[in-house]
Length: 361
Image (cartoon, rainbow, N blue to C red):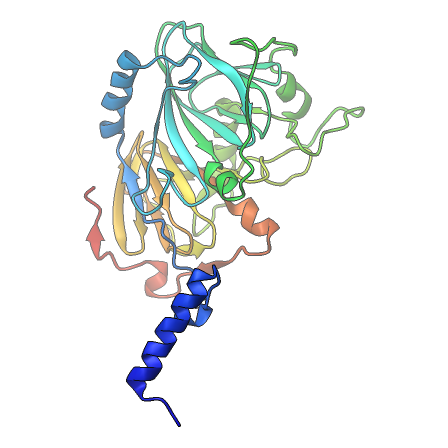
């Protein structure tokens, strides 16, 4: 005899309860798949005007010694747990005061340092001392010893970018402190750049380690010059004059899990919208402009940061008279390696999204 609808519903509910008590799952109870990504990451902006006073206050209250290790403020996206910037990327702003040392350690997460302001500080990576200037990019690949020190007279501030959320989700977090605060400097100044920074050239006898990028320090002077040379001949309709930092041994992304981009948005340019399965965190290094992310306008100026979720329509614009420069970290290499990278262009309204609201956070 067929059960009544009420009795059947009660029986099913009792059955699902029994399944859960047995630590099993009945997948028909809720949808498992979706037609397209539904990210928890939300578009968000962090203003330098809000960050700077808090960072300088941290300089009065916290020292980067053992236990603290680094004086940083993380950019916490309200849409994701764990106080990270996207589901795969963690971004922070770090302050080092004159005479300070952030002690040497290493960890399984990969990291980058993009220098925002100041001078006189350095990062030592696997024995190579890298003096840092605004616009420089310094890599600290997974499980490489690194420490920071200041020999200057002014505060040094930079952007940290790490793949901590990815490593945490894979449950492969490792950390080790160096026996001393500073690791020995064992290589010549500019060692990796002298060997691999000439573009398309490398020492004939060099055998690069597959797990370690041979170039760890990208100088702003060379990067900026490359941007301007490219701007004279070509540009992308979606990103304007955009370049990716590469591993000179492979020609691929500078790091296995993080792609680093630098892009010039020229005066008067408004790019077309597109979206990718990857996520990104942008830093406005110079100039000002705005980006439209999922129909929401995000105005930005020098020092600001903003996050673009996966599969989110986005475009950039510079309505001023000066150049605007954006640096970004992206998780593209992860999705390319897994065969999950997709990109799509916005086909309506000549590639521009309608702006439905302005971000006020």
